[in-house]
Image (tube, rainbow, N blue to C red):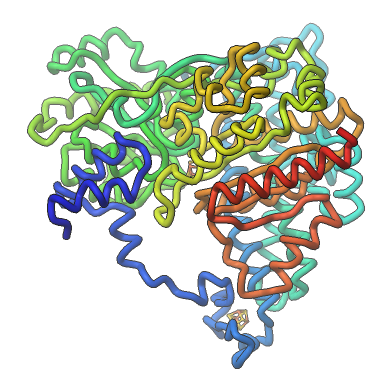
Length: 629
Ligand code: SF4
Ligand code: MSK
């Protein structure tokens, strides 16, 4: 498809990072189909779908509405464009909320099994956090074993998924003024599963047809994710595996090794991958790798499983979501181990062109053409060892003529949990508040979300982060956005040289980067907790704070609840990819304008990251002025 002279140009068009560009070039030379080729083949994509005006909810459809105001203006059932667009949005958002929350539930289940002595390889690592969270749940801790406390806490958290109390305990962490807004508009989340199930009910044909009512429930469902499922996932993972602390490691495809067995851990849930981190310490496996001709075993992460491992154990991160096929195309990966979410079903086909084994591990996420090795807490460490043995056995199959490991890894600093940020500030957010009041830090923006083949990989994240720090706005990040900035060298204290002089001085004083890696996608909950603590210290709502959110390259359904719980919590959020709502002016107006009167925040859509930075800065200035600073 490409002449050799075009390959470099094409690679530069697709990705910002030079190691990614090199392997994109190799993949093209090797004739490997990646998301970029498949995206091109999908063009032009369906305009009705992009506008959100197509409904496929029942067997009388699919129905689609003329977006120009002509006929048909209603589906067979009579649903108008506002109903269809808002219902589609709620449907997609609920899928995302379910994904985060079901991940959270699995971590709680393992906490329970660990407390009951039924799991293999797990232990409670952060007893202090266990006790702190247990106290929030009203669970007594004095004189009790950590296992007893953990059992009660796990049961308390599992109850959050239904709706026993009518509210979610974790959401009590929000400031009173924010909770009062939720109460006033009837969007306080009652239970995690409950809101998602109710969303599924509402999108059924002939149930909710009022777009305002539908969108309010979308906010409630998103809040159940952010302040419920995701927050539980974060806190239980911290309890089991340790709350992240600042550390240094490496990022990009150059983290793959030329002479060690390379194992890529990809997906979202740290439950099995943490056991793999333990398994590679087994002296027998180390010896076995050497017997097979390798110099050792090299674990690297990808996407949010990678972020979880980077944050807690300093495992290097090979890349973000568009790197999954590229990692295999290096020809150097013995095994790619996946759990769930953001796994391209294409990877067994890519792996089939090299020697890579793809190992699926979750009952919920099987992919034809992969080797399935089921994860269960009872046998987790044994399964982890088996997986490593399989990868080692595959090492001799590496075809050195087809291997290319690009460039050098980029050093990164990660591990900025909310607790550690607070600790670095001396135990309270007062110094941060003082810095904001003094204008040393103009505001804080969370950049989150994925890569999208419509945007040059990482360009949106990196450009926006650079623009913001230049304007003395501190950036906190999670997910693929954080990996993008890691590859670009922004997760280093030295990157403060790119910041405005006032932010640079703060970073230099604290020895921190101007862009803080706060974790995986579920760890956006850490940003909520931080915002909440600052707001409480000031006695205001989160919506009063000079904060912003952005998802410059999002694609996943999970980004919808993330953006929506940011906005519903009071954080103005700019999306770089338009959501599928432009077919309804009413839906658009409510989300971009109408919400300002409810949560003092709204959504904006701006594909140009420099203009997105302008919007975020304007919003921060507006909130600063309202606070009188
Ligand atoms: Fe068509 Fe209504 Fe069925 Fe949707 S729910 S497919 S608009 S008939
Ligand atoms: S991994 S949801 S592509 S951020 Fe969390 Fe990246 Fe988006 Fe997946």
